[in-house]
Length: 351
Image 1 (cartoon, rainbow, N blue to C red):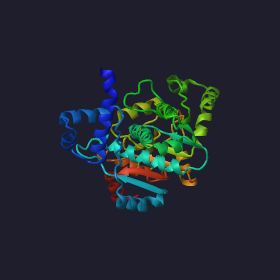
Image 2: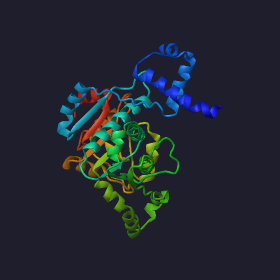
Image 3: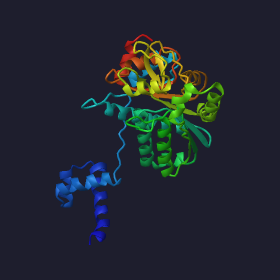
């Protein structure tokens, strides 16, 4: 009996969803119109969401005045475009801020992709929680906009990581190769044409680097250079900006990459693509770093028409120093997507 009832239940769910979301009726009004208990209306709306019958896209509005002011101030530093979203809402959690930034980053990525000419497009990605949110919401956006998905299916997408560092335990950090594989897999599931590359040097490469002779080092690095050379030639670059202060996970990464280098908090303001930079915006070289360097990203951002997009906010101020420092000297990006708190900090600070 339950088997034969399911089509009727689905028809009921769809009707209720349309009355609730399209016609804006209250659950009480729907219950009265259909002669169904309000508790049943609530349960079926929840099921409609859980089973994908109803899908939601939350798109934080852009703060256009603040956006224009930040662009005007940062244009002399090479910034060509700015997007500013509201800071986190009720509860003021970092996760809410990350979701706001990820949503706007996803919309901006689609805007750039929709304007890209040609049948192929290459995207190179760094990593971090915000870029992880961007990737998830980009896939969600495509799922809920058949026309956008149809347009993307006409292209072949090439995905490369901007950095080859990884650790076997992901914890809450999404490393660049892992993010490339995750996004690539999800786009393939949507029938997009995707080539995703995620070479991962074994960890003993970093640990044994100092014991290798010059020729061994050269051979090891050349093995991975082919991927990084292709990553540098991407059409679109996606970056996060990481804080240094009180970030124990990043400090462990630094120790793995260069345990002879001293990284005092007074010297290092933040990192881009795992490469640290100082408070005056200068990058600190790391011998073991297999990545597109900060200097190379700065050159791409300044000397080409390509979009080098940084997505980062500073709601609690924990990234304020990092983001401000990244703007001081040849920023490794030319598009900044941030929140209103960080935008106000930029307007108040000398650059």
